[in-house]
Image (cartoon, rainbow, N blue to C red; front, side, top):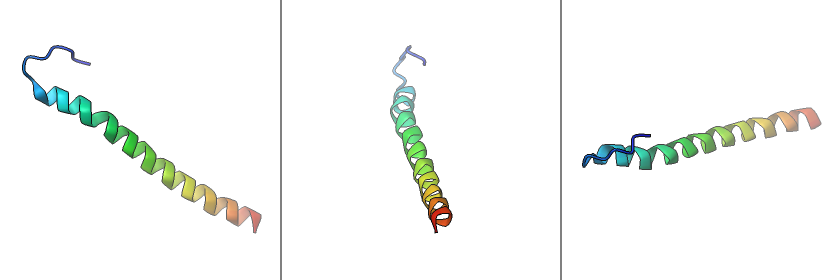
Length: 46
C-alpha cells in the first residue's frame, strides 16, 4: 500500500472503500453459496 500522502485523498478513499467492497462481495458470494448449499442439502435429504 502506498503510505506516501502528498495531499492525495483518492488513495485514502480507495483504502477506505476497498476493504468494505471486498467484504461485501465476500458476504454476497457466501450468501449465494449458502443458499445453493441449503437447496442441495434439501434435495439430498428428501
